[in-house]
Length: 501
Ligand code: SF4
Image (tube, rainbow, N blue to C red):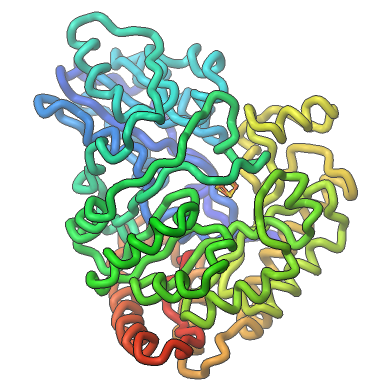
């Protein structure tokens, strides 16, 4: 089935090669998030849920006598402005948009700006990136940025700067959210409380060779203050796994509870080991979790080196979250070695039986530098190294028990089935009062890509969603009061905001 996908969602804006620029302006920096194509099977909305913190955190480390600007090409406002031409351009580079990052680097370097490349792909493939940059930043960039700009002014730039993730994370400055176009995001309150993960799954970017991200925690007060300061009803924790340290999560929940805000976060399913912790999360405003369930087959989980409860216990654990009014966005990886062509129907049928409000599918993708990549390369199973297609929406390796075409078709089928009227209805909350809100959320989020395109392009995202988010917050505050009085009150509340919205 051909899916609707406008050109602006597929193709990066044109960089006008004819266009010249005025001379560079001293002490000005521009930070760019390059364009990446959007998978039309999934909701376009997920790209403007909340901003990443990479560039706003770098911006916060800019010396006071510098001017810094931010440009995200994915907000559909065209290519970055050339005037005033910045003296330094910082570009974040990820695998799937590495080519676009290099095009932007060339465009600015040709006009006299000094280009710094950083990000995960620079850490995993520094030799490739070096050909496109004046300076590379490998590893944590925030701690280096101020020094790098001073070296630039002194004419003493190094070709490569190495940042260390072992530096105390709590000492880094808070992100400069004021640089963000607020209306372009559902919420600008993206927050990180912890860094790293207790797992090191073979397929996860966290297991990239050379990436040493020890587990770190920020002070609860610091996190709470940051959320309060941004003054929005909804926060999204973009931690890899907010539940890695359960004692910390409990303390964080106690800090968040008085704020009467709502929030969502990524956690592993073992967060349900202790149902009282799940209840604390709900009482603190958690309305949705994004859970990397990955697979319903234990053999796949074990071979990926993921420490996780038995998959046969997943249903009971999902019910614990639902019983506390927390919606579940389950994340599934398709194409593991123990997956045969039945995996698609089995996975969707399980999602429907357990009434997951949302699910996200990924085709197994061996990221360079990970153990999975090394394994696939050693076995001669990589189909190509076109990084732009290493985006979990394309098949880039030879699966064991099906053809690449079967895997791709099965992935598309999972999304189409899950976003169908029948499946949305089948997964509706048990509690009848929650159904209208659930349906509104499902249809707006999952079946309205043409609407999302307009919202993003005309910067209406926040304006259109704000009333729904506020309504959801009020409903949740009322729900929390009932939950606090009666521990078993907690059938799905059908909040408009879940981990997937
Ligand atoms: S549990 Fe999730 S975040 Fe942690 S290593 Fe595995 S895939 Fe990565």
